[in-house]
Image (cartoon, rainbow, N blue to C red; front, top):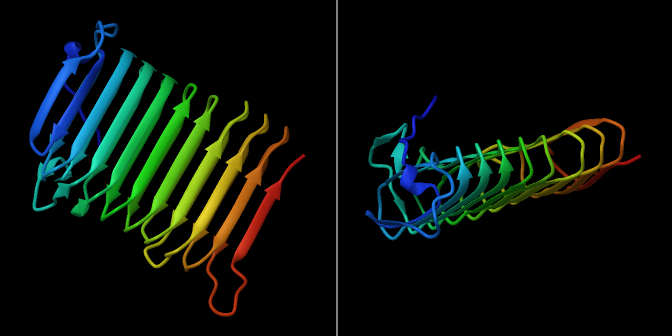
Length: 252
């Protein structure tokens, strides 16, 4: 699906504050980027949205209380969404499209060029962060559930991190750095609650990691580093009497 954003040159460097259906937009510094754009749609109450863009060719879109771009009974309230982009041709999306939600916190912070940050969150009381400092990075969080904390942090170029999680009370983080092209993904099904996983990828090698969770109560610390390429896929689907603390390490 593609989304066409309006061309709003006056938002070259802007900060938009939205509470309920009231939006106040203003230029907080001289306009440096003539073709940044912002698209905000909302439904609900007591939601705060802050958008800052410095540079050129950046786009930001917030759909909080929409489904497929159309207003429905889907509601969004008491959320805080903060998008900050500095550079050229960065794209940020902060959406809630599937279910009504309240009390979620979104953050997308991108510095550099050609980065893509995407958060699609549903249900309640979740905290989601994307921070990218470099070029050509891709970070995406798709989630549905309650009381989760998800984070993707990228430093350097050509990193890809993804969290797709549909359970409750989990804590997943991806931290990527170094000169290599790194890919990391966490998947957790709707029957996988109370899981923790911390993925760290660094070094000049190209590293790939995929962690799949289908049951509860895992605590996983996973890392890849060094100059050689590394790849691992791990599936957590314990049935009974399992030791659920797992450590993965791949180094040179």
